[in-house]
Length: 250
Image (cartoon, rainbow, N blue to C red):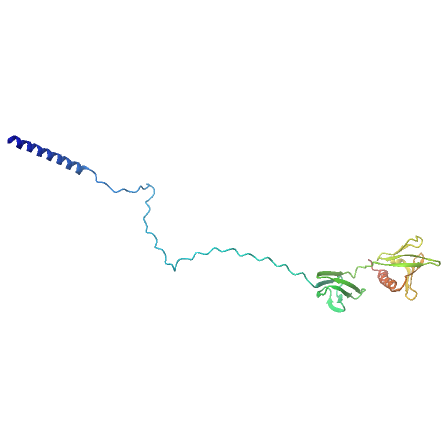
């Protein structure tokens, strides 16, 4: 009986010792801490922010639709002018200008909206021979500069030189510098300054242009048919000859 009681006491003592040891182990175990995110020692942890509340549908900006760049229309070519414009100038002040007998004013003057084709231009100024010539007008702008101070002459006519016996044919040419008779008959050909003619006379009825070269021969020129062309040649050359005789130079 005593032995049994002693065994019981020993067992109970062992149980107590084991329990005490377990209690000590539990009490000395460190408490587990929640995991902490790794933070760089130089960078503060980013604050946690709440997600933004979406704006009401009425305040949302509408996304612009994709647009196609506008194409610049090709330039329409300008229509070519159908009428003519004349810019008329003169080297002498107060020169009167007429086109088809209509007074346009004093040069310089611009005549607009002239129908294409032939028109008559007349210009005149005191102290100078007037100008009367046919001009061709085309669509667009054209400048006509009249030089009254400049002596111009470029005339020619086919003629026959009447000899005392027989005749020869050739061409009379006139410029501000000279009058020349060109012919295959070398004995009759001549060149003379306009101011070196002793005689330069026209007889329209006889259809005869008489020319006497100073210190030279006398010529009687005629044309077949109407004498108008020969008369006009004489008048044109004579006007220039008189201007040269008065002291003006080409």
